[in-house]
Amino acid sequence: MTSAGEKQHYALVLVKHLFDHLPAKMTVGLLYDIGCQLEHSCQKWKLLDDGILSRLKFGISVFHAYGHQWPCQLVYHPHKCVGFGLSDGEGCE
Image 1: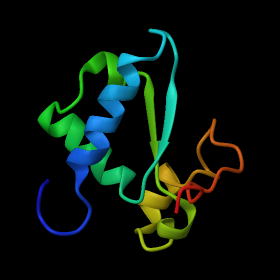
Image 2: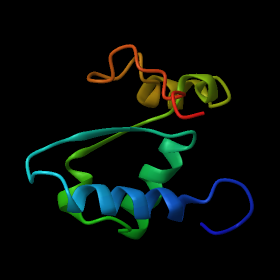
Image 3: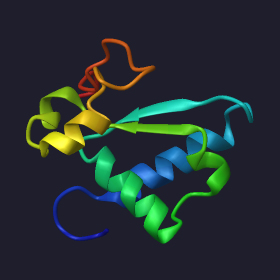
Image 4: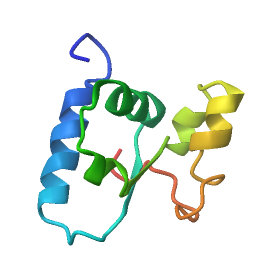
């Protein structure tokens, strides 16, 4: 999680901080280059509270999606996930 490349712990800190300031019933869609791996890590290692995970929908940003395997794209591509609309996840880059 702290090796070279994408550093998942930065995303986790941001998510935890965000949920500290949101109403308890609000859900969030998270588009991240490695959203699929982040969700897997969170579930496998219990990195986020179940109350947060139940209100968080993971996805991968559009331009990075095509570097992922087809089964991953089917689950995490924002145009195939309900709730993301036409978001591409690349607004901050």
